[in-house]
Length: 101
Image (tube, rainbow, N blue to C red; front, side, top):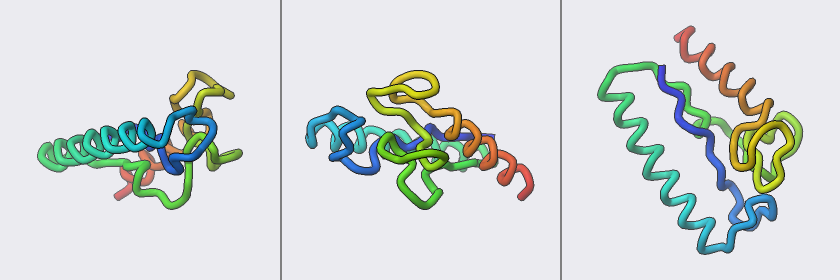
């Protein structure tokens, strides 16, 4: 089972990111490249993948409630720029779904 890291940048103007537009673009481009490489490695290893990036909606730091899967500069349930409790629950459900396929 492979679970890529949750996406951080949905809206470059999200004030919870505290990034300039250029920084947001850089972070997103690095994250996209890492995500692509992670998926390719998972495909090559023929493992199941529970991909949080495949889910609809903005689950970034400017989301709210269960739709907010990752914190920004203000941490509500853990560490800055890391998954929230809701994000952990959502990713666990993705793993359960991937295991049932």
